Image 1 (cartoon, helix red, strand yellow):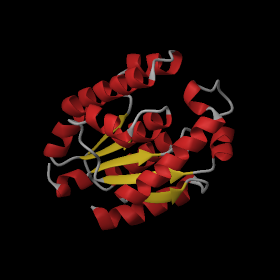
Image 2 (cartoon, helix red, strand yellow):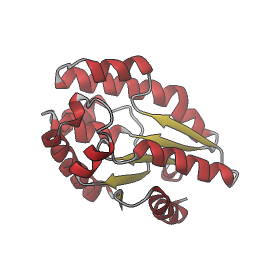
Image 3 (cartoon, helix red, strand yellow):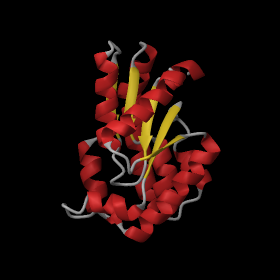
Image 4 (cartoon, rainbow, N blue to C red):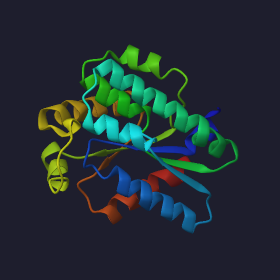
Length: 193
């Protein structure tokens, strides 16, 4: 896919509690209000994979394989077709989540990239950056998953910031209010789309 098409593949990235799901919903709504066809997706895509990955504790390699396979199902069944017909895809996570989370679990970046070799990378990425303690404070009303340990999230956040620098993500302060974040996202998005 060419660069122009990939710019319409927008992903929100960040540690758990950063507000990715909310921003995906808010941006999709904002775009729809302006007559844009939007397809919203969330990784992992398949509910059974979401449940398994939250409840089980597979090896880092097995986990990366499950995420990669799930991502390919999503992209081949939804994302590619939406982009090809001119829709905007707004995604809660993308392949960059694997580069942050699975590498934080000990896999080499090259291995994660190899496993995701057939994946489409989003052309527009917003990293919702937030201190770990603040993110954990947002999700303390539910039981935390194995992905939501403080030390682990510190490493994931560090990796995300490194990815942002290398891949040119738009870094947004996720400590702001949702309307402020959406306003910043939209202002940057209008330049991109």
